[in-house]
Amino acid sequence: MKLKVIIFGASGMVGEGILIETLKKENVDSVLVIGRRSCGIVHKKLKEIIHTDFFNYSKIEAQLTGYNTCFFCLGVSSVGMNEQNYKHITYDLTMQTASTLAKLNPEMTFCYISGTGTDSTEQGRLMWARVKGKTENDLFKIPFKSVFSFRPGLMKPSQSQRNVKLIYSMVGSLFPLWKILIPKFVCTLEELGSAMLYVAEFGYPKRVLEIIDILAAAKSFKQQKVSG
Image (tube, rainbow, N blue to C red; front, side, top):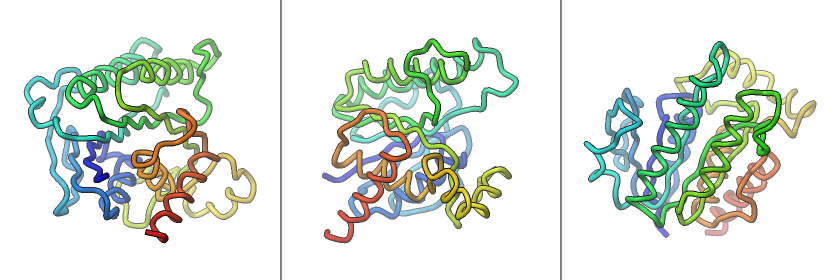
């Protein structure tokens, strides 16, 4: 199956890393990036749409059809935000986008970037974790072919990335140490991208992928690529 991928959030660190890995894959036929500003990458497989209103896609719906995969990498930090505003950006925006894509591409696999510590019960003390948990739970109800949620922790950026926050630059420089001390909480963006590509093509036994699952899927992707 040739993957025809839509990526949201490619101008951010995680989305940029996923885009870089996606463009490398031979079995990816085309990539459409939707963002408020350009991702700054030029590639023969890549098409880009600048779109500012992620609660209304009516003007570009015709350009969103014919895709079988979505990597949704949009997200904001909850620091300094109240629950209502954070929920509007994290939950409402994601659900609006997913509902639109499901209507246009019901055979799509939707891959959502969540985070380690997300609260599937929606009842915990941490506001961001409850909101992320509700987002995951309600995404699973949308009639896509399949929906997967990825929960990465600390991530090492790829060398070719430009959109890297200071804390993740530090993570990258100390990655060998983190890998020894807290192996269940760290991965590289290359591994995350590989895992998402593998799951989009071959599926996975779990809908929620913690870091141990991300690493397993990334390993399977590498083995599949070698054998192929």
